[in-house]
Image 1 (cartoon, rainbow, N blue to C red):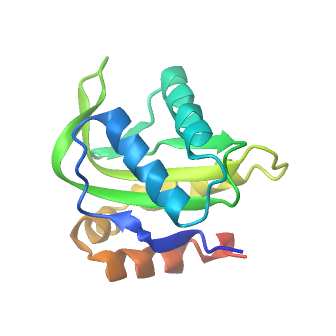
Image 2 (cartoon, rainbow, N blue to C red):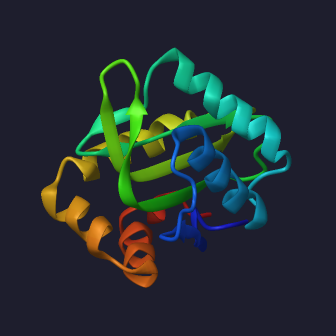
Length: 153
């Protein structure tokens, strides 16, 4: 079993400058780390989820997620962007931090809701957000592992 976060899924050198391209880049990270069985299916499922309702959560943070048949194991990918990008075209909201959640479609334990809930509770705290924004890969990894260890099997 894979941990909920792999250090290779913390990216600070994002080359994409648009939402869909960043989602694709992050899905690729999850795929290379072994979380996905079908990167294209996962990517499309995340885009479909974005069409239902924006995953902008405030604080310049996007929280894209997808329950997908393209997921092998639940995982996270975190991207720190060098510049803000437009996340929600209707509201004009921009993000500089993105946390992507990948969960298997065939789960009966509401794992995606549990992860979303835990992250949402953490992200309301200034110090947690500041630590994510200022941390290097090792610092971010330790922060997530410490606070989401219940999701590691």
